[in-house]
Length: 152
Image (cartoon, rainbow, N blue to C red):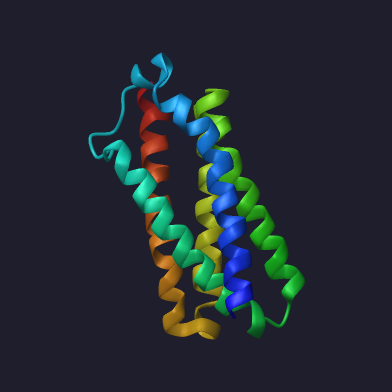
């Protein structure tokens, strides 16, 4: 269990680091500062705290899911797609300034995490609660991206 957890922690925090490369500069850009943002947009520090907690919980979730999975290749494929979508959102939104494409990426990521949550709930039961913060945060993030798309 500990080795799986360490592996998923490394993979998930690598994704955060890669996304952070684009987010850091983008949040301070004139383009982003000038956008109309949702009134429920949290302060910047919340994003770092939320993502750190979420990735720890998601790593634990994946470490529990992996050993009991019947179709490991399917879970691996889902995880890889999740990883790519997670990394892709920041450059899509902040670097390329593609608000609609960012909305599509984050919507796909939200649906994928929702799939993890509901499809594997019977297998993991209460441990599925570990992925709930990720799903809820993505719902908020998707709403923020959607607001920016519709108001700008």
